[in-house]
Image (cartoon, rainbow, N blue to C red; front, top):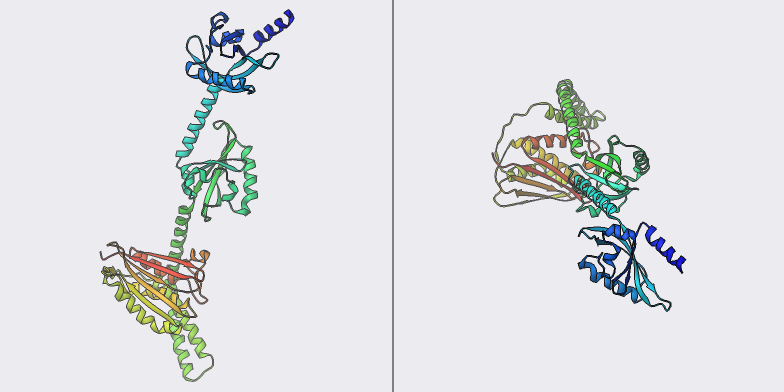
Amino acid sequence: MKLKEHLIDSFMNLTSDGIVVVDVNGKVLEVNKKFEELHGWTREEVIGKVLPMTPDKYKEDALRLYQSLIDGGQSSDFEALKLRKDGSTFYANVTVSPMKDNEGVVIGFIGVERDISEKKRADEELLEREKQFRRLIKLNPEPIALHNDGIIQFVNDACCMLFGGVSSDDFKGRSIYDFFCVSDKDFILERLQYVMQSDSYTEFMEIKLQKLDGTFFDAEISSIYVHKNMGFPVVQTVIRDLTERKKSEEAIIRSEKLSLIGQLAAGIAHDIRNPLTSLKGFVKLLKAKNADYVDVMLEELEHINYVVNEFMTLAKPHLNCYMESTSLGLVKSVVGFLQPHAHLYNVQIHIDMDPDIPAIYCNPDQIKQVLINILKNAIESMPNGGLIQIAIRNLINQGVVIRIEDQGVGISCERLSQLGEPFYTTKVNGTGLGLMVCKRIIEGHGGKLLIQSKINQGTSVEIELPCKK
């Protein structure tokens, strides 16, 4: 018996955990030396006291736990706040097990305590660093995504806005590959494997990314492997939207094309137009003699003349002969001019107008040129006939909108984005210069020309013009 008691005493005092033995009411029966060290009390000071190591506000919870173990519960393992003699507290991992007599009746409990204050403090510091890190990322003006093994853990506000989300929850748990082109998956996987082995940011790389609504946009991305500030390894990817930069680059390229076309046009006007006039004259003489293929030659000469005229519009500077004009007057004039052409295609034209449309200050000939070009395109887009709706709307003292809607074959998204480019056209015999000239005219008036279209559903063209200056 003495050997057994000696072994129990050795176990109690040689273990690195604090041990306390209490009866069913929580009264202390025995403690070990580690318990004395943890709490600052001597054995004599706690024997016979009810749960001295438990703060008063938690004593009832402890007694309820004991009762549940009496009623048949097993050992309970939990974290708890423990009290020292000097009134200070510390966090401990506690295991409470029931002691039973030979008949299986619970006669008391053994509590084992392990001080986890340092671990708790380290966890809290890590959590605080992670919060600060996430806050820095969240408020960063550049879009940032954190992902682990290809699964998104967090995106900041800028990234959420860029991809059309409401909150980070719209992205958390989703695969990063949902936002790339399918064809880029192998390349992205290879790049991520490289990132995991590197300690610095990768070079920014241009790529197409997909928003939540399914639309793609041009972007550049750079990634870095992050682990020190997060508590778990993640890859941080910075995303830059290139949409505006691409637009600026395209605008510069377009401007350079226009400049080049203008220079070419000046030479073309002199080098082609004069001999063209002579050719037309001689062909008409041949027609009077009933020569073969004269009509075909005249038709082709007219097409050449049309192309030269388009170039001339670009080349020669237009004087700003602006005057007060009415939208309805301009539209009716053009509709009357194109009415015979519309009849050939069995197309009806209907005009609807808001009351009190203000006058616009414009070059009437240029605006007519724009309307003729757009209406002619609308008519020719309906080879089987249809209706063209022309609506003239008031922008409430900001200007006037002339909307032209047809029921034609429509234009695909890919082609729609290229309309207005020099030499790009959807017509067999077109030059691609007409719409470009129209855009230049409207922009020269301080307005906008917007085109929307769907395949087999028609096209809508909106011309926004400012009110009289």
